[in-house]
Length: 377
Ligand code: ATP
Ligand code: MG
Ligand code: MG
Image 1 (cartoon, rainbow, N blue to C red):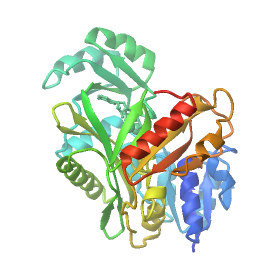
Image 2 (cartoon, rainbow, N blue to C red):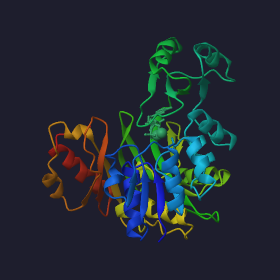
Image 3 (cartoon, protein in one colour):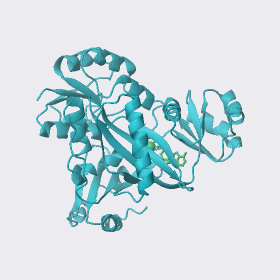
């Protein structure tokens, strides 16, 4: 096939490259990190900044189409590429997804419910924003930087309005949103793919369990009421349609203690909570990204087996390389290591998918593994 390009060579880029190459497409990767996970599997690694003119020109010259593994691509790079080759998803979707304030306002404009929030741009806003919203913002709340936050980074708990000033100062950001803390009953995500002709396919919802702001487990099928899953699919579809989106889109949802559905955020790409699809679906979210990028018909998203995905964080490497032999004693578990050189606490080093005819059994297999590894939660 034609050569494809991707901005970003982390684990998402790596899994995209593997899927594309399996399907016969060579891939060029642009990433400034010489040791990025995708470099080892790419046909060409352009080791340069994302707005490097020569690297962007090389991508435009050699690739039939380009995608991104993350939303923080500089707008200038997107504009340069969009003038020359198909870039999917497009600049607008990325611009919205890289800014929490724009993203949440966009959801609300579509009539979708989010947690109550206010935008803060300077210290004075801290007091005025809290008082002058149409309804007073309920505390406790979370202060989140509008840009560059992931895995719960760039967030501060704010129990009462009196703690706000200190939290604002410690974030040291030009802009943040102050968002009410919701009493969560459950969290889940919907991953869809939308083709050039507007057709959409949906992956089964993943029930997501976070630990200290980082995704820990994704359980599929999700133990979430069908009516809420249907409502969430409709919400995700509205978002994709409004953006005239092409590619894989993930949308995270909260279920409040009262059973109300709230949209949390979106990711304009394959998502950690969709890694289960690699082993448990007819086609993975990465196969699907290749298809959407190439303008091919979208593939079957059907679930072949119940599955639980567990992230392997750098914490697990604290006493050296984990005992993979212990893991391989469990034939239901499929191991995916990203080959990152340095293991830091909280860093995503790999994941496992446990497959079983019942998700509960898959969960207990992972629980056993966790005990073997002395990696409690
Ligand atoms: P990601 O790695 O998914 O991009 P992120 O850093 O963008 O994460 P969020 O998704 O906003 O951060 O928050 C991370 C997690 O923190 C959520 O999945 C949820 O568990 C918790 N959380 C975030 N906002 C709220 C809220 N308003 N009320 C309750 N819990 C929340
Ligand atoms: Mg996020
Ligand atoms: Mg999130």
